Image 1 (cartoon, rainbow, N blue to C red):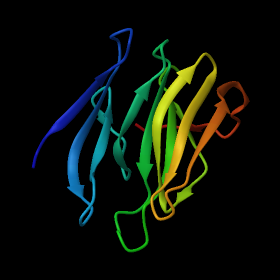
Image 2 (image 1 turned 180 degrees about the horizontal axis):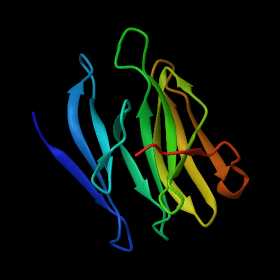
Image 3 (image 1 turned 45 degrees about the vertical axis):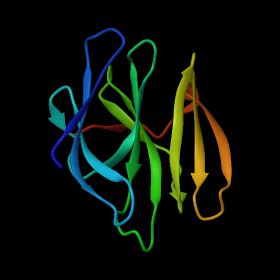
Image 4 (image 1 turned 180 degrees about the vertical axis):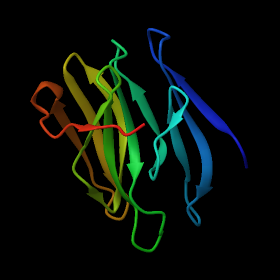
Length: 137
């Protein structure tokens, strides 16, 4: 399997692309993420990707392991494409980050814990994020 999934920003100025990397045994595929033609090195992602309406932010589900015996272990990676910075959200043990959406300055997503079936919703006020790191592209 060799395919790519493209996500163009609402303002058409940015492009995120998921390139198939592999798949979990008996599970979903995982991908490399390119942003505006540059790969984010050393990271793997699921299919969940979402642009903010103003095209400033890209949210992606980052996978921290592909070992199906200990995973899934995921988190949200929020990228500010204007400042070339990212923020890593809290790690989700034994679950996936899903159903991404933006509502003004709030990012909303669900944590789906597949072992228990539990689903919780999380809201993050983007203006309160302080752990931004520079993207080394």
